Amino acid sequence: MPKPKNPVASVKIMITTTATVREYLDRLVKEGLHGKNAAEAAERVIARYIEGLVREGGLQRIIPPELK
Image 1 (cartoon, rainbow, N blue to C red):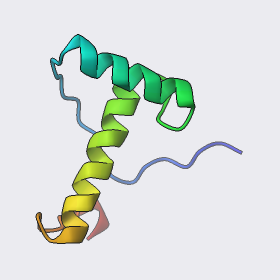
Image 2 (image 1 turned 135 degrees about the vertical axis):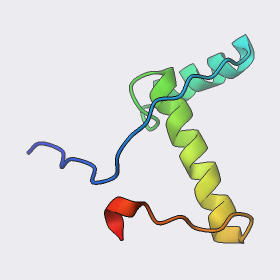
Image 3 (image 1 turned 60 degrees about the vertical axis):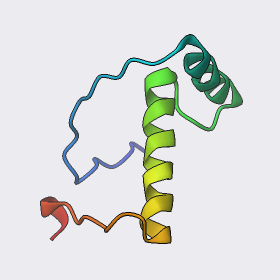
Image 4 (image 1 turned 60 degrees about the horizontal axis):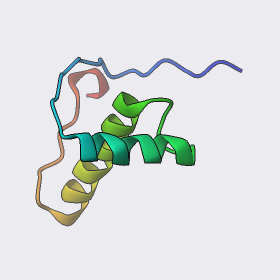
C-alpha cells in the first residue's frame, strides 16, 4: 500500500554542519529508524526536537494553514 501524501506543504532548506554531526546522522541512518540518508535523518531529528520544545512549552504550536 502506498504511503499517503502529506497534507502539509514541504519547503527545502540547506544546512552546513561539521563532519562529526554528519557521522552521527549517518549512524542514525544505519540504525534504520531515521530515514534513508543523512538529510532525512537531520529532518527527523530537527522535527523531534521541535516537537519536544512545543510539548514542554518552549515554543508555541503552529497549525499549518492547510490543516486549519
